Image (cartoon, rainbow, N blue to C red; front, side, top):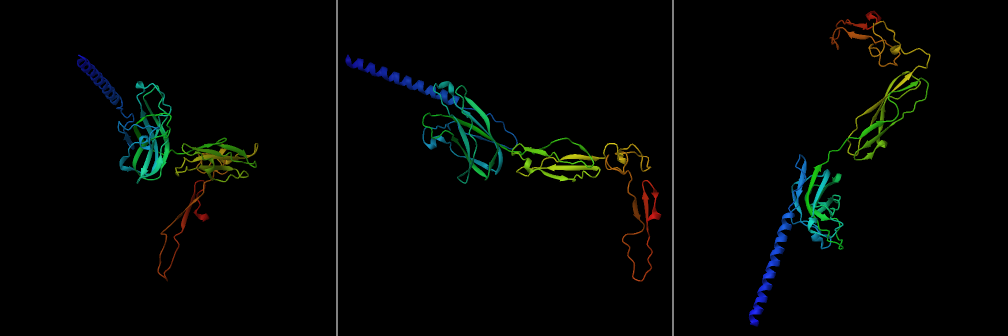
Length: 335
């Protein structure tokens, strides 16, 4: 009788063990299915997407091998240059009650087994979320061609918490450098009275990547002579650290006669040269409103060939030339 009772107890125990193992297996299957995550980054021209295996879990509290993924070979290699980096992480917090304060990782770039660059780490995955995806780098410089990458836990070797995290994928975009921008200070145009002092208010320059590059501005164009009536153009140019030039910016400075004095011919509302055209820009003889002459220069036209070749000893007669002036007409006799 006792033997039968013992056999029944053992059989009951075995049934319980099998049942527990069965439940554990179901739980593992459920977790395994929940660990399958789709990369959120879309394919596009110039983008490289790196997908990590579903079992590439990283932990900060174990050995270094547990803190990094296996190397993923890139074919073709990632070329040296500037890149934007995006990372995506996953963890199933619905099945966990403990807090993990540093579920974060970064991307390691390798060339011939040597680490040549690392991305910034992705933010910690909040305990009330299962997925986080974000841009971690803008204009990351990679100095050498890359043939392998790996994910590495950013909290390693923190042994106070597992901080388990699954690197889902990374997206690497070729960085397109943006041009700098020049901003003028002060007015444009600037008008000053002849004989007054002039100080260029200058300009500032900023670049999306390099920041403030005002000190690199090159000022050119005309040199303003405040003692000479006229129109002057100042140019401003700058390049960023990658020699990408900004659009040139110009400033016009008008030096005008003192109040009460005669106005320049090109803004006095009179036809000073008798060609039937008045002031700038109607009169082609005017370079600007402060130009004090509407007169256009005459033009000389050669007659005959140029050059002329003759045999030594031959007679030579100069074919001459003609001259015409927009205001005076034919002035050939004045040559």
